[in-house]
Image (cartoon, rainbow, N blue to C red; front, side):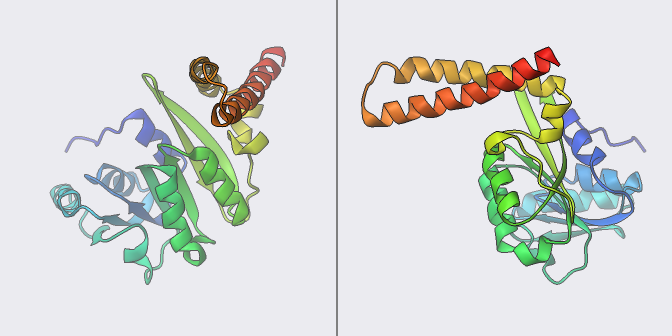
Length: 233
């Protein structure tokens, strides 16, 4: 049987997982990650959850086809709610907005305090880092990957780890300290986006526009400082 091929984003998510653990794959979609990690002996068991019955069905069919049905259980429901009464070591919550990830974690805050979390927000990564920090959920490390013009930030939370972040929680500290190449490309893109937004707000002098201008300029100062420090290191 052919090996499951994961794209760069999913490959990086899987790379951050601890081995020989029981995981929950939240929003399992077609089940590629769940099946991959049991076949590679990264996970000894997976609870695959989804609020989409068609997606859950595809996961069940893939697990059956590949002989993984005894190691993957598909559970219908929202977020971590289907596994509130189950024992597991960690959760993968990826491919959704940061606000939704925050909501899922917040709803189950006591449940996940001692869990490994690999989180990949499609938006609001800064807000997610703030949430983790305020709830003593320590970030052990972060990673980034790129697909064309799309950049993906991946956050690994471990019990007892320190929450690492740069000024105002914009980026993972380990990526900044190592001058990660993909992060540097991402920061340059963010500066370009902010400059375009500044061109628009400069047309107006109302209070809202002036506030937005100040926010964008502050962000660019932070971003440029990181680039300069890496350039001179």
